[in-house]
Image 1: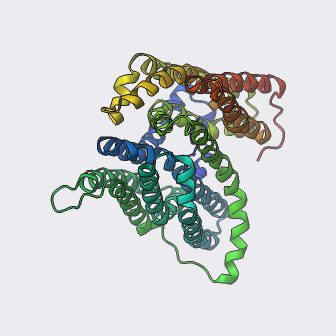
Image 2: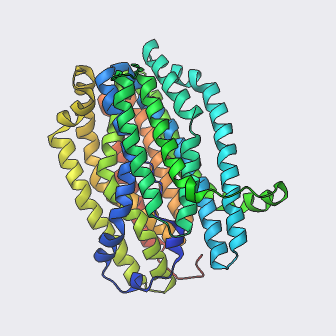
Length: 454
């Protein structure tokens, strides 16, 4: 279970690169995946660094970050999904040599980002207190979560603008500026976390609020860097409507699929809070540790999309199958390392965030060891939907994703919660195993036919 946000520039996927069809598959993956993995690692640092410092500061603060985490995923889904739509439409116009329309699309993207931020900030801040009260049991944790959530949501314009401008720059082939922005933003977040949470030197001790402020400062820095090159003037109102529909036609599928992560994490939090706030915290820590294990797989799934699309359009069915199963094999090896880590050293991993919190450590060790079983089947349950997406079988891709994130995990967790907390974690490996089996069945049932492919 992970937020599956594609970081590879969409225009890259649209290019007809001949080496996609000739170079050895593993060489292709090793050539394309590392930069994507690095970008995803940098993005993961925002939440992980906040959790590390807050874990040293307060147990209730750590629980607060766990329940706000899915809200941050929703922000990313909206921001990046809109950027994907802008990128896709701009790439189309550039391909048709319609540069003025591409620039107008970029301007509309800026407009939509500002509107999306304003609406999201207003709604989320209005319901934040209610959300935190039903998600956590202790008043202190609720207060921390409400404070942190209102800051990161209310000032989320940084991530909305940075996501839009990053996609605009990528549509022009500029990969260096977004990467520099992400690095500088992450470093800024780390520095201000340390200064503002604990109150170092002239800086006040702000605790959980300091972590939230550090996050938005990092996002704003990244937005400024990308905006220097990515900003485009908003066209007149009469022209805006022309671009809104095609932007969201391309971006909404990305928004919806990634927003599912928010739904199932919130649902799991509501199930776990019936046991304790510590159980909710353990779930949040799992997702942060999981990011490191899944980064290689996420990088691979991002990179195989253009490779599969190219070879499928060229009628190279056998090469498509080879790409799929080599990606699965590489993913399985990476996830096996994650399984070993969760089985052998769960306690040291948890102590990174919760060294002096015995209840969290006790619950977490059992949880990580049970969930770790799911990592190897993840190599199939994550790669298979990407395979179907890349060859134009969107229905199968969506069905597998919904089955995995909503259809299985939540009902299974709810059923097992009636037996006991330790049984809830069984929902994870069972979900991944069933999804992998269903994915393989669909793979065998729907062979590639190389019809007209878009």
